[in-house]
Structures are given as C-alpha cells and as structure tokens.
Length: 289
Image 1 (cartoon, rainbow, N blue to C red):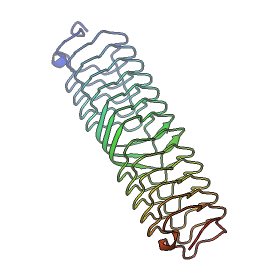
Image 2 (image 1 turned 60 degrees about the vertical axis):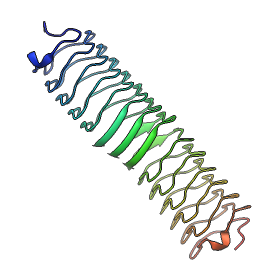
Image 3 (image 1 turned 90 degrees about the vertical axis):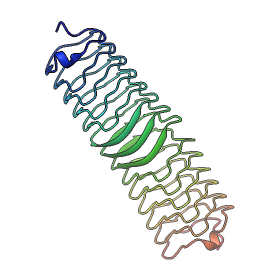
Image 4 (image 1 turned 30 degrees about the vertical axis):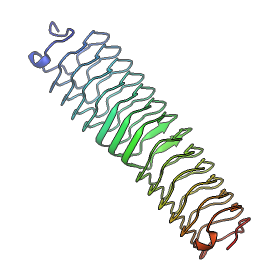
C-alpha cells in the first residue's frame, strides 16, 4: 500500500484485487494494466488517473472523483460508479456490461466503441458527452440527461427511457429497436433515418423533427405528437397511431400501410395524397387524400 499515493506508478504494485482504497488520494496515479477486481474505491480521488486496460470487474467507484481519467480498453464488467464524477473521462473500448452509472456526472465524457448489456445510466448527466459507435441491450436511461450530447452510430435495443429530454440534439441513423420511450421529448431533434421499430413512443413529443426515412414499424405511438415534422419516406407500417398528431407534417411518400389511424389528426398535413395508406384501419380526422 505504500505505493498508493498521488502520481504513483502502480506498475510497481499491479495486483490490487479486493484492496480497500476507499477515500484515498490517487490523483494522477498510473494504474495501467493493474488488476482491481472487486477493489473498493468509494470516495477515492482519482482525477487525471490512468486506468487503461485495468481489470476492474466488480470494483466499486461509488462517489469517487474520476474527472479526466483515462479508462480505455478496461474490463469494468459489473463495476459500480453510482454518484461518481466522470466528467471528461474517456471510456473508449472498455467492457462495461452490467455497470451501474446511476446519478453519475458524465459531462463531456467520451463513450465510444462500446458493446454491453444491462447497463444503468439512471439519472446520469451525459450533457455535452460524445456517444458514438455503441451497441447496448437492455440498458436503463431513466431520467438521463443528454443535453447537447453528440450521439452517432448508436444502437440501443430493448432499453428503457423515461422522462428523457432529447430536444435539439442529433440522432441521425440511431437504431432504437424495441425501446421504451414513453413521454420522451424529441422536439426539434434531427432523427433522419432513425429506427424505432417495435418501440413504445406513447405520448412522446416528436414535433418539429427531421424524420426523413425514419422507421416506425409496429411501434406503439398512440398520442405521439408529430406536429410540423418532416416525415418524407418515413415508414409507419403496422404502427399503432391512435390519437397521434400529424398537423402540418410533411408526408411525401410516407407509408401508413396496415397502421391503426383511429382518431389520428392530419389537419394541415402536407402531401397526404402522396403518402401510402393501404390497409390502414380506423377513422383519422382531417385526412385529405
């Protein structure tokens, strides 16, 4: 333990499995390649530390300060970062399956080249973060903040979003298969070519969005608001759109084939005559063909 000090080179002490380092000052420490399986690092000060390629499965970083830390290509399976500070942290290529980032501050953090299942980001702050080239399954994003974040090449399947505000960010080509996004706010978001197949968008706000070639096959989008959105070539095949709002939306070559349109409102919608409604069910209002 004598090597555990600010700025230390931990290559001198690489085996720290189950070690109790709670509350220690480890600022700028170099833990490259160290084994930290099950280590206890709650409330530790790890600003500017290097944790590249560490083996830290099951480690506890709850309430720790990891601002500006490099955690690239590490094994963090099952690790906990509850209420931790991870601002400006780089998690490129790390294994983060079943990690818990609940209530973590991750402003301007870099999450790229990641594939994992069962991650929790509930109430985490990902504002201005860079989230690119990721594939998550069964993740939880309840109350997560994405303010001004950059999300590119994102696949998030069968995951839960609740009370999230995506307004004004870019989600071009996002793949959000089967995700629960009830009452999510996408107002003004660029969602061109995004895929929501099989998801739940009930009561979501998708007004004034760019949704060209977006896909909503078999979604539950009851009472979803698409007012003023560009939906050219969008695909709503077999979607449940009961009570959905398409006022003043642009619908050139959009497909509503086999969709449920009961009570949907198309007042002022543009190019409804160029959209496709074969097999659609229900009685929408203000639909002019």
